[in-house]
Length: 198
Image (cartoon, rainbow, N blue to C red; front, side):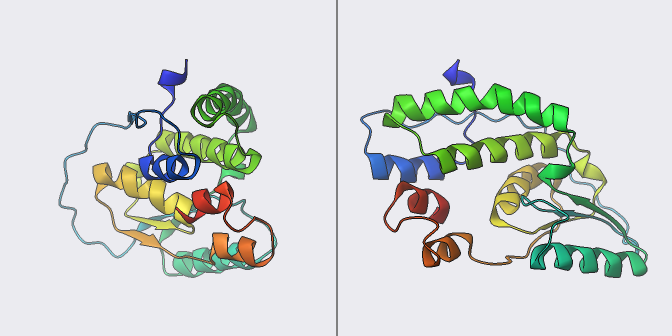
């Protein structure tokens, strides 16, 4: 049922509501997160365990992938332990099951709320849901530092970090929305622009 759908980013739905102007009550937000972990004082240590996480595929050809590779190598040379995670590194069977579970729910939500759905927003929402579910299943407590490589990961880890209270770094590698507008990959004034800007 649609009531089982979780929208952890109400501000995105609020912006889409402003665009479509549906005559519906606000979306209720429900969390599925681990219980709060008591903050513990850890002794300072030279060697850290670092999570580098990206919403985009890794490895791939391009600057982001090169940056992550070189950063990881440099940190490992200094004796730190580094894990890199991206959606394409998750088990494909699990991803497929999550995709089959969430896609009809997202379609139903957008159709009931707005009378239609945008394929790019549907795809991004589905990917974001799957990525978040997979990150949630990881043992994030073992990391001393989270390093997000994009705004999607920064949002997810930022919310999770309310439980972990770890240093969270965010390195933006480009302006996703503005690049797509500049190269006409999305229409100015469209729901896609509204969604991605938010």
